[in-house]
Length: 390
Figure 1: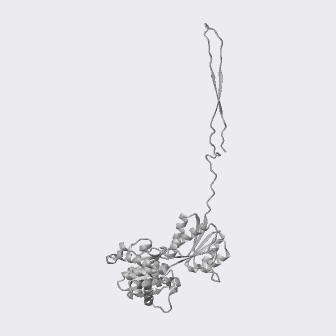
Figure 2 (figure 1 turned 90 degrees about the vertical axis):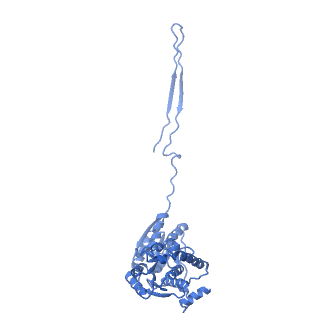
Figure 3 (figure 1 turned 60 degrees about the vertical axis):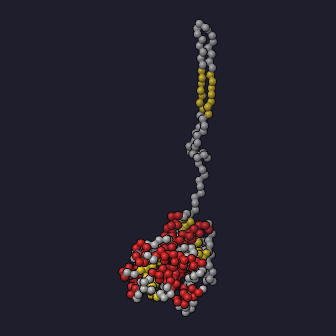
């Protein structure tokens, strides 16, 4: 501790009056003592210089469980949103990249580490998150691409559920593809044949039919999220069959479809992330899916909950600008700089059409039907006619 002592200074004034010998007289002395008090110096203990220490801000401890990174699509988008949250928000974040067989242990590790929020990416995590959430009711969980329910069909009190209207965004890019197609035939390549990918396919075909009721389709499923060779095989087969634009919704498998388009002088549409850069001049646009935005937002929501667990279903579509063509979602259009002149010339007018289509979907004037809502035995032509009449 540093302190100061009060000091006193004494000023002595002596006046001696000496009378001249010839005048005579007495010697007189006058002494005046003046005490001057110095202002006390500030010390490290002084309230003027030392405020009470501010309480340390409590940081939310977040764990993210992801599949194989490097797909430049779905998983990379989730990690991108997590990284943004770590940079921007008061959190401590860790992630585990794990194969499916390792993910149960990944959740257990995060629980043991005292995480406040644990996020699983993909519908495949529903069972593991259900088990972990029910066993740890004080921990907040979140899942992307699925709604987790218990054995009675009820929402789980400590699970935030995030889903997307992929069919709306796919409708948008399907419309673009059919308008730019020169052959009148477009293709779809799916990774796994599961309901969520069927939503992409359904929206794609609806949008293409809305643009051109006579459009034809070629479709293939690879059975994998990570098999570019199979994706390329499907792409080459569809291009040989007369298609000239392919939409790939299959994670890293889609890279093969894009290669097939580039090698044959045809075109492609990317998925989930902005993939327009992958094959410049080939990629017309990408169907954005805001997994990154949703991960960021659920972290924000958990911070706002201030320690209280919650359940929710957040469904993101065109209205929230979480899905749709890169042309609108992030206002980029690399194809306008790298595509052939005859197609590029169509983009300004086509962009305005797409904006009108988007507004009609948001207002309900156009109903982009999810795969699970298709009527039994309804053909795509029947569907588009019904949509136009409703």
